Length: 138
Image (cartoon, rainbow, N blue to C red; front, side, top):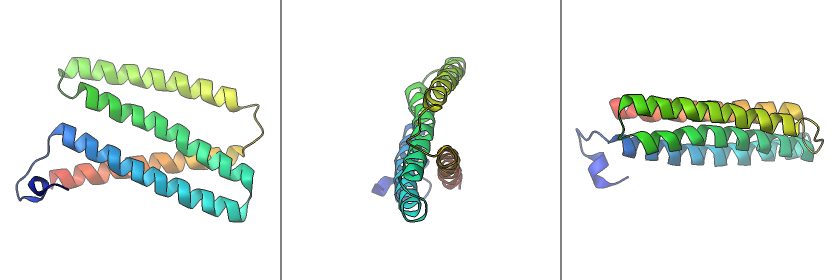
């Protein structure tokens, strides 16, 4: 944290907020992947490890796209900002659909572990977003 950010009354810009969210989310994903893979290794085996990591990676890519779009469109008008966000959601849904359909016939991972990794990564991302924004507004 820079000294300016610690000063009382400092209100971070949107760019600072999005950058903080991106950094904290990456750290959260790294911790989640390490802890989840460690637990899976000792409890269930390699297929579950790959499934969990795959779920975290897919969710991380989807949530990361949203942060990138928000950083890219922060200085644009509300209409173009929302249009870009909506477009990114459509692209995300298409990518997720193609990824899940493409992985459906693969057998190197456990499907339940993919779901658990995906949901855990979304919870981490939403928690980081909530925590960062709540601290910004305080």
